[in-house]
Length: 355
Image (cartoon, rainbow, N blue to C red; front, side, top):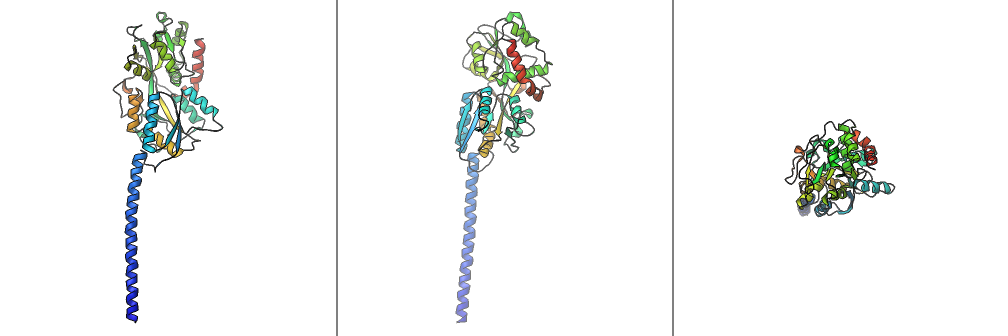
């Protein structure tokens, strides 16, 4: 009897042991499967390797519209996150942020002005994201030391002219003040165009506030022609022959469409203006916002930037449809903090000169 009871106990114990082994093996298999699924989800949903994303994201960005559309479609496909987009000039985006300050909406903001991005940093509106994917591949000065501003694209400011009115042109900034260009020149409104505002601040920074060229152009009828698109249109239509401080990507795009335009960068230099992408401190969708910042620096999105005639933020990606960073002469000794502090006053003064 005792032997039968002992045998029964041993059989039961062996059964429990086998069951436990089976459970352990099954758990390992499931964990491996879950891990693989999570890895697949990470690969398909975010370059940063974050867990599967969901929900929404609100993004404020300046033009070009085609690039913004490509960004949104690519990010939504990659992550499943639904993006709500507001597109406007830097001035319009800033006005909207101000109007919404008591009930903030934006998660990510992109501006066409690095100095305006620095102002947002100084006022404590944006958050740091030191783990941003591919940030180490940006040009050295296109990400700030606190990992708050990411220059994922950029434009340079040049001189754009109508080839049906002028055969060729290579005058430097100061030479454009010559009376032979009377009533021929337009400029974007620096109080509407963040790029133009930063250019003027950079010009003054590099020339120790030498206003003589701009005073001369103003005396010769320099026209302030609205934001970038409207300003370029005055030259495309032939209303004016020359646009100074025009954003270059607009020119390259229109030239490829067959418009009678040409662009050059004056020999004394210009400003290459990184377009900062930033996460708002008030974001209600921080993980989605981080994934979007990562996406802007991905191979896919950076190629979209190049296709849109902008300068890619990553130094390992170049363009074959426009002049690259290495071939654009730039002003020396630019101090973006000084430019940030003075840019609004400089913009206002230029408009006063042209009234």
